[in-house]
Image (tube, rainbow, N blue to C red; front, side, top):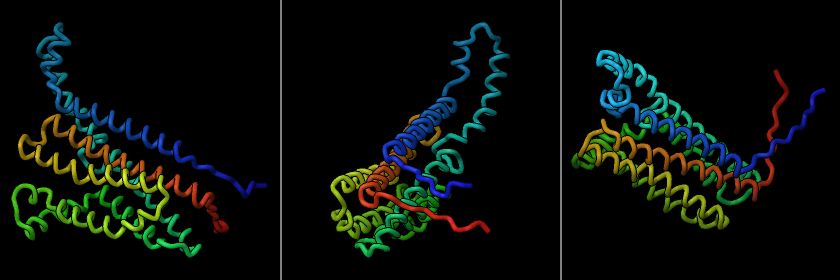
Length: 260
């Protein structure tokens, strides 16, 4: 006979540690990728393998582009790879937690249920944007509307994005104030980390791009900081949500219907 009742305990700190460990591994993999991409292999190999002939070194160097093709899997500056999928998944997880809180609030007739629901919808959108880069499609329309130079042409989405962030902050200010002190602090820090990476560091990377281009190690380090800040913001937000749920909802029951 099957045991029909199982209890699964989710510990906020443990979940955060596991997710943070994944981020650390992704950053390490990305740093390895960038090192392999931009290191001066002929010079390095000539020093390391002085006993090899020039022809042998040339063959090794010719093999490197084959390895670079695989490196896309962990490159934080590209889409449709492990870092992008990971970011999409953790944002969706945050959306699930937000929707869970919204459902609980609505069921119990508590205030701000709609705010939690809208947050869940926003995070579903952010997960889609993380995967396919929806925000980048607004760059050229924003450039045509606002005019301007290199900044708006390449990253015109920053203006509508910044406006939306300001509107969001105004509309959600009272919502933030009603939260418990710990949640208020964690939500705020998580938001600063995410917006600082998504908008702040992207402006930095774009400015560096206009000066020195993207085919260099420094540019990709800036992108690494940008992506790391975004993931750190989401993970801290997940930790804050789990803490809020454990303190205010305590327990959530998930029931499955009879199998077809």
